[in-house]
Image (spheres, rainbow, N blue to C red):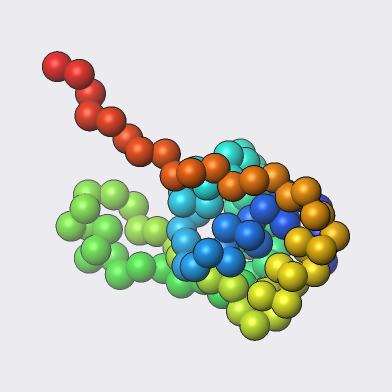
Length: 103
């Protein structure tokens, strides 16, 4: 797998626990056109596993179902390698908090 800095940042976000795509987008500030191909590649190559949430959960929250990703053992080893190779990996941003609209 090509260990770009963007891949290292996505691995770092996944290293914090199971995440869905929007969490990773918010945490890394990378565009979706970068994050989702990386997630698919990590999953295809066995470095991450993904699963869809129950449709009923999404329906209750009136949104589309989310796909959750987590690192496999091989992915955790790749994270160590990625952080060694990209010692100055882009720092993860604090999660953005949505504010209610002003009335």
